[in-house]
Length: 301
Image (cartoon, rainbow, N blue to C red; front, side, top):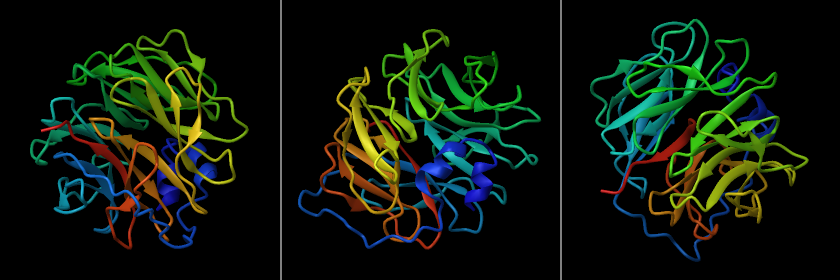
């Protein structure tokens, strides 16, 4: 399964950072001292439990897990629209390459936005819902692009010899954080002003902006294996919030900023966990022999 992901290039750096899916966890390691109280929202994620990758949604306590895509192809990387009505995702259902699709929040109305002979993937909405940033290999290597929410106006934002991936908008829409050259960078929303936020000896990846714009969570293997870190939006104050002998990555802030969902291999395979923003109260949400990954929170309701 992991080899199929890295074929898209999105996880080319992460493959080394998290050490692959075959890694067996060293016990649950949950911190039950301060259990978080989830707000009333949903978490979308993707899972291999049906024999192929599908997009699911669940309540923040892990209940109510429901298949949304129900397709024989590979559907991954869900991203809620800011108003909660739509989910963007990537799928290879129309050929061997991945394309960007959107659907209603209940899984109906699935529609293709990109049509390309290369891979288009990792969609993420602008805060006002008017645009979608994504990654494409259409120009020879992975670069970050942006398009209107209906798929028109596709434009390239980065132009580097290395791969650029994991775009995420700042809450005010003025900047995009992303992964490049094994580090987390930031740029203006038009692609100008690209600058590094991290400069570690390891791989820093999966940036996720806090709802108030003051913090960025990210994954890093700088201490020997992939863990979740949080830093100020300017790159200062980098602090580790998970400590595990296996890999923790893909952080996703709740819309009120109090919680972080993430993926961990601590129990032998990829599962989705929840913790308070300071790293306390780590709780497992999914329990499945297959992979569960890519959590993304719906807006508050």
